[in-house]
Length: 506
Image (cartoon, rainbow, N blue to C red; front, top):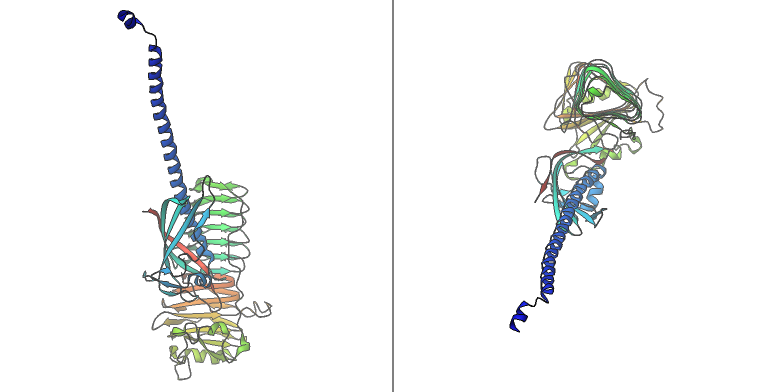
């Protein structure tokens, strides 16, 4: 019987089957665990990627926010700034901000730290006259409230003024036929804006350390020119000169791009056709789009109805700390008496700024006649306080003269206002401003030049400031250094940005 029991194999198959099932179950458990782990890890990686994308979206949001937000709006939400951080809200907009993603929900939170022009933490109230000049931005992105990733950037920022964005703004066609140099204020921001008509560069040797924007016309380059930024026109863009060089993009919004000779280091963008692709080193893109964004030509007026006080825009800050942009008014019925005041050194004259009463940042020399104001030949004038010459006639600086800012940096305005009735019939009989024949402005005198008629600039050793003219004629051997000027009544509408770096931080 014992032998029969020993030899009986009934039930062994079940034991083996149970063992096999157990092994299979172990393998299935391992496979399932690995699959779940891979899925979890993949989901975690996806959320980390979404978070860094959200953080980058935050930086892009801030770039746009800064370009579109004037100091007054920033101040309304930011309040005062302590240790570079807004007191009421880090960004001065609702946070966090959601980003549409699938699956899940991503968001970003932005924290900027503001700095002044010297690189120190910005402190105090933000206003049209006092605003930061740099900002460090940290954008933290999250997905479903987890997996935080941070991106950081540092920006140098410069103000954009309503209608006064750029080194040169012209309301009509621009024809550049002589040699000149335009240098930027913040690296390569010496931009030229053509708000109406075409732009042509047909002769000479030009250096433009900025961008050239033609909002309502075409661009033709057939001379030696070096544009450090982008050349962008609504209509056709034609470049046909072996020594023409555009460092960044060449763009035609609605028409053709032709680079017969010369070089475009960036991307060439066109709407209809493109030719000369071997000279476009960044490749080409077919893309029809809107014209370049350019400021509307500003209608800068002056209100004489409030005499004996100056136009309120020129007295907006009277009584405030530092008397910033608070101008004393001197009215004249002829140009000769006005010139005597500006160049004179007596107790009742400008006297280099000494004749401006205490409590004023400068003086408005208001000429009510349609005469032509001309400085004396070979005259040197010290400008120790801000000086604005605002005339109903013309300004002709065709005699050699030297204007030196003293005791710090000051502003000088040469203005023919836009007429209150918008009747431009006085052009070209009068209303033009001409600066040439070795008229010199030193580096501590920033000049804001405005006329709805023709501004002619030529034959100067140096010019620091901005030129805004209905028509701008750039003559031979003109050297311009772009300095943004706050003309009273022209408000900051946003800021341009120069990116030092973008990186991920812990």
